[in-house]
Length: 445
Image (cartoon, rainbow, N blue to C red; front, side, top):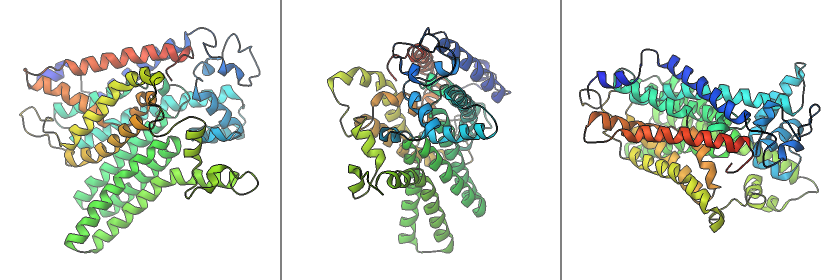
């Protein structure tokens, strides 16, 4: 691949400025699409939100135009707390409620509109920060010195801007915040591997613990964040095998303890809400059915009892259109996970040599393949499959896979690089159509 070829396609002298401009232009376009949708939409659930002001049965304040589907629950929980048992399916409102309470303490107004506005601003800011975090994560794994490496960092971050999550990354939903926390956790985790290689043990330990904390908060926002804790289990298994075969040492014991603490930090995002729910429903007169389980879990109960989430429960004839809708991203997630496990040799420099990076790309890609692969399997068998289009936004592996296909086409004239362009065009088209459907309160959600 000629050095000038990709440079001619993209100006990489100031990638952060380019990404920033692209981000805000895309966000402005999506906002116009959603805000232009007339009236309260097909479903009038948003009009049920108590609001002192205009008649929202005919017109909505613009922050409430973005409060659709689950966001109606989010605003209610953020303002009043968990009133109904089924609301325990959602953890993101805890963060939204915390920010809203801070606004009220500082003299600001309460109510659904300010809370919705907080959620929108939070989504915009954290989505932008996650774009930057993905750029830094990409640089950690693939390097940032050659044109090819800078293209990988830039293009993967650009794909994250226009990913299929679309309007959900602008609305008062948890997807943007989750994406920022999860990708930042991956960044710090990869940085810890670099510190380990450089012999900076104290810095490595700190990065592991902070990454575990970020995964824990990500799990609090979206329960699938617990899958990122698999990274610590992966390392613990490798280290335990090393101890069994090579013997103990202070360095190995210290490393194992830190990995364990990092995993505990990640798990707390799931454990703490369960303790709170147990105190509400199981200590007293309520005694809900799930309280008697060997491992009481309100989240599993609520998802199954109220939302019909469970193994193969979504496999019905009526849901076939939703499986078709999620099929492209499901295929890409599975394909990219297999690609990563094979430690690809396709990411090469202009001279044809394997790219030089701060750490071995294969080792990190393999770890992330396990996390993303588990998400794909669980989504196929146990989730409401259509949400995969939005929760996939917080997983970087598939962005790199699409970029690698495009770079293969540039490096080898016999291979087509149109797949990357087609994928980007499809994501843009899907996000715009989704924006109209979302703004009109029409499925799919």
